[in-house]
Each structure stands twice: as structure tokens, then as C-alpha cells.
Image (cartoon, rainbow, N blue to C red; front, top):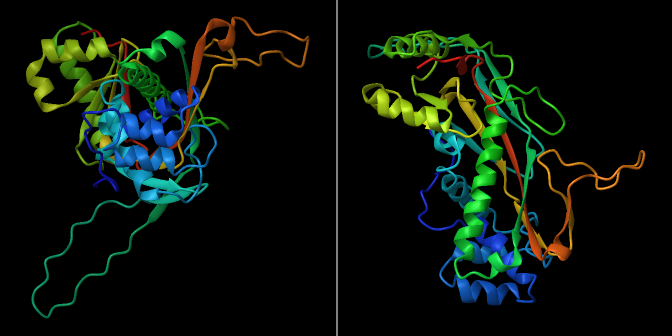
Length: 348
């Protein structure tokens, strides 16, 4: 099934990244119009995303404005994550649907087996099929990233590339960590694609036979009722080893590397059996006065009990740093329960 939106392959930073950079420079007192005119005079997407927003600093979260541009730029941004995210590499091979302002959206899920269309002679009655159809409900969850850079770095002439790279690395890891996890659904997260899936045991031996056995087990688990568009996901190092050691296999079955996948795990995904949704309202902000708990598992700066203080804490003002924040809504799910399988303890 083709994606509902196209995913262009940009050779320049996306309009969303430029929105974040505009938020940074607006902190220096520059107007949004001047920032866009001076830095990206020919980028109409960036101009629409940045200057048509509300006057809140660097935010593009107002409903109803430039919806088509926001959709196109979102796809452009996801494509720009491909060097850092395996999800970005497979998203446009599945069903991709803009969520807009919807709190949830239902997409069709076929529960009956595939049935071939009949060949009918002229004048003969055409068979009537009865299908059993359910639905996948996509409910957007918020993905948020904060990156802290020094004020000196922000002044560099190539700040756009540096900041864009930092942001893409964080956003790519955030996507992959959510998709390729076994986490259960929560108020903050979607269930990971591995949730409820039992790991297959890797074949021992560490040679080509082990690879063959692992691939056979994965394909057998994923192929039934699927599209045959199978993509492998592994750690970045393991993906490179696969391509170098087994080029013939790599030419037949694509493998993508991800920093979110353990070194001894191999995941197989029917890319066309996934559904992806996104909101049209990403927001960007920059601050030099904020107080942050510098942790991947952030706590309240001062808790209500105790009270206790989070550690370590950074004052952006005191450190001469700039905190850049991006928030966006993402949803995903599977159209088939067996769309994903994985092997642990691979030996090759």
C-alpha cells in the first residue's frame, strides 16, 4: 500500500529545523521576518511555518494555518532523519496519515484472508465478496526533545548545520526507541512494535548457516498474510557487519541500523503492514533562562515530597547556554499482529 503522503529526500535542513533556529535567533531580539529574509529568502516552506505562526516566540502550534505546508514539511523532516533513524527509512513504505487536529483516527484493518478477484465471462454474474474489517486506532502521543548548546556554538557561521544535526540525532533516536521497544501502552507512550511478541532464539555457530537459520525463522514468522516487503533492523554495527560479511543476502533483504536496537537482536518488519500518523502542529522554543534536570529520566527540579532536588541541574543563564526544545505528535501501529518478529542472541 502506498503512503498517503510523499516523503521527499531533502539535501538541505528541513523547515522544522529552521523553525528551531529561528527561535534561537529571535531570543537575540531579531524579528522573525528579518531572520527568514536574511537566512532563507527562497525557502517558502520555512517562511510559512515560521512567520505565519502566532507571535509566541518560535512556535508553529496554531491550528488551521498553512496546513498543507506543515504536512509537506513534516514529511521532509522525517526523511531528513534517515541517517539517524531506521523508522524514517521504512515509514513511507507503510500507510502514513496526517492526524491534523484529530484526537484519534481509525484506519482499516483487514481480518479476513485475501481472496483473488474472479475472472468473469461476458454477461456472467460477478461474485460478491464479504470482508471482515476491523480498525487500527491511532492516537497521537507527544514526542519531545530538549538539546542544550553553548551560546558560543550558536554564534558559529555554520550553526544551522550543527544545531540541525544535534536535533536530528535526538529526534531519530526518540522515534526508534519508541517503535522498536517492547514497552506496553501508557499515557505517554504507544505500545512498542515488539510488545506482545515472543523473541525467537538465535541459531548458534556464528557462521553463514546461523544467519540462514535466523532469517528463515524471521521470514516464517512475518511472511504469512503479508506483503513480502520485509526489512531487517539491527544495531548500527551489526547492520554494517551484515552488509560486509553477507553482501549477497544484503542485496536481497534490506537491513537498517538503529542506535535503539541491542547488539544481539535482529528485527524483521513487514514495512507495508505498519501505519503511521502525525500531528500538523510541531512547536519549537529556545530559552537562555531555563533550569533543567540534565537526565534522560528527568525529575521535578524540586519534588513536593521531602522536598528533594533533582541532580544534576543546569542553569542555562548561569552556564551561558541555550536550551532548544521541539515537541511533535506521532502515532503508529500494526495492521497485522504478526507484522513484526525478532531474534535475540544472534551469533553471526
